[in-house]
Image: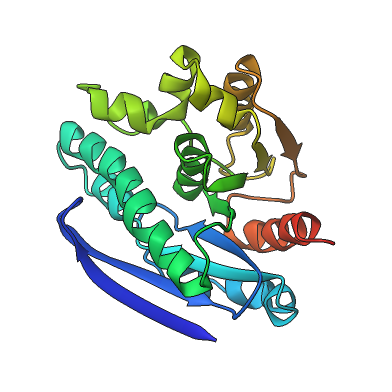
Length: 242
């Protein structure tokens, strides 16, 4: 049921690990939190929470290392962090996605992106940068404005890695493609949550005509894996119901 693959990516200058759980179903790429690796979602029992959907063959779950997120936590030079976030998007499209397609024996499958905290940023960024691949983003307790986490310079790499910054200027066929996609923006109202970030992201998408829905969960739902283990199975159940 579980399979792991690691290779060196010249695009980010590091090893990248891709882990898969499940045998059949819709591919779901779950991005880790800022410092997480590809197996974080297993250690924090998310795979257990998704066991029914996996067992029914409705989803195949993939996760990858948080390469750029680790740079952010390590307080590296901001221009390097920006470069890694932008380069990671290229790794996703040109290395991760083909590996998933090969594993699924199809290069036409559309995927769902998902994640919490910085993982939510990556899930939304994946859908916006690669609408040819990702049909829905499930973004939970998102941190969408990375300017809160480091000081400039805000380079071109930063601009193109951050949906809140490049979407307002986006026009043409790429925007038209994103308008055919859908983002679920979920947040708790409990400890350490920042619902205002979710509303900011929703307004940014809405202003460009990109379909999205904000779900604000209760004050008992904190910025924590307990919350995300409740959220993600619900959304994936809805999205994969026949």
